[in-house]
Length: 313
Image (cartoon, rainbow, N blue to C red; front, side, top):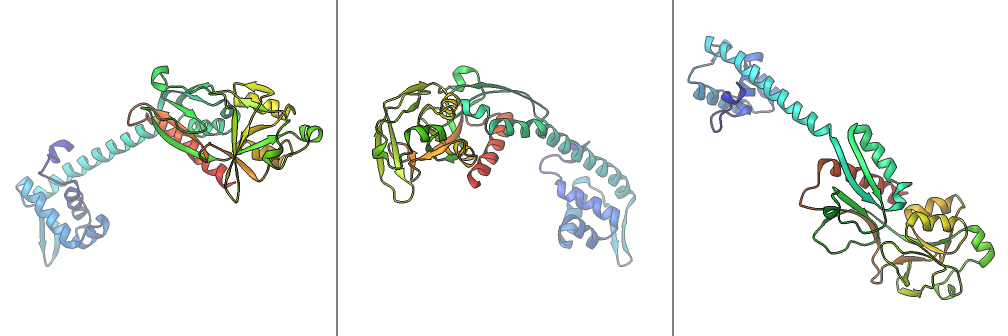
């Protein structure tokens, strides 16, 4: 019924709504207020409907507005059609909001205990039919080759045929435990880092140099690193760091709460760790193709919101 009334180039939905408003209120002015149209716009809408159906539907005179017998019959059909269209829109909207099925993705190990659980809890609360299959790894995963919907990565985006979205940008600090500082001291400048114990994160790749930049003045300082321990995951580095085994670089969104709690101490506090070209690190998501799945979009949206909260703290 609705499709028959709204054939392309014959009858506009707005005209049909205007006609029903006139039929219910028996006033062009009142119909204009309820539909947001002008009174002249309502007049043109009624004329358009009458032209399509081939009958006079509305009587308009100095005594007021009334429906013709054809208008009364057509109103019942038109109102039913509008209800059908409204119900269809609500159904589509509900279907879009009630996501279901599995979303498969990879994420760095540090996200296992930070940020991601909160983000997934938010998504699950809104979409209880959505299920997550998460692989925690610090390796660079290609979601297309691994059969995943997307991959979350840290540090810096690599050039590839994958499409990426930034989740949040962050600083990286040099940190050590209070116990390490008590035993080995707390360097404040890069040039006195020599001789200290270093924890190196080898996933996804082994770095032999750290690049530090002054927080306020700029200027990159390169520091060569001789590793005391090498660890393939960020969470592994963090545990050795808390155990007092050396100095390591750590993402600010993980480090700062531990510094505030007194569980870590910032080393060379006037410096941040950056790339060799001075770029700030970022957490980002990559996926194959121009449009991610609806489940992927929901998770990315939640991560971005939490990332914004981290940056503002």
